[in-house]
Length: 355
Ligand SMILES: *Cc1c(COP(=O)(O)O)cnc(C)c1O
Image: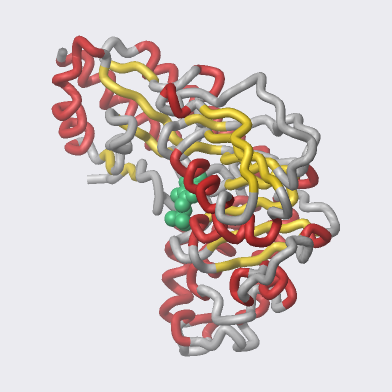
């Protein structure tokens, strides 16, 4: 039976990305060696890194003065590297979910942290509005897509301070005005590649300003100066990122990714709103187009498990909601297809008809 992958991360990748990466794992560029067993210093690997960086700059229209690096440690390591490198006196954080809160916790180790707003009291079911950011902060940290709760900031915020963004789960799903950010970071395993690498985009002039000594490996300058080759980079994840970037470009770039994401999300939310069994969990204007969360209506609460089993029997994978929201979460990253979304919608309609 055909499986439809709605996993939240690691998550679905385009089939050709997986196939092309698998081929290189068997025989890298006809060298007779696997991508897994070549040196990262081998002459064939540098072009992989260079092309990946060039495609990232091209797709996101990154202006001059920014560097693009690949690191280990996941987005979670960036939670501490950001304040280590960029927090001088005071930083502002917008608390929109679990990941934002974790980022804020690390920042408190390095200086004063202002929580400009929070929707924690409402189980993070909306993006706070109408707040102001102090003008004397070093940066405002935001999480553009809240993977667990299914809210998203899809329009660039209008603030008077530089922003730093965790874009782990919506990077490359829309055009971004990179000039508004001092730093953008993203763990790869949601929308870019297999797990094991983190993408970081940094404004060069903002490095080296923090009044503290930084361990070599946690200092962005180390990795920028060495072009992500200070130590052994995760070669296979970077290769799979390159394949995804080629796929994005070949499929029309970020405008097209955004169009497809909207089409998928519009269709699924329309069904959630129409179907008598379900309702969405977040404020309509803040609905994520990447992670679509929904729960059973109260009067059908006992049908949660049966629906999960029904959908699973029809090939849906990974639709169980995160434990902090419950219900269901259909993750629709770039690689998700309209066919997958329609298959899920069909399950919802068939299940409704049975009840
Ligand atoms: C998954 C995720 C993280 C954590 O990523 P790791 O690479 O596992 O550390 C952080 N932020 C967001 C928004 C995420 O979706």
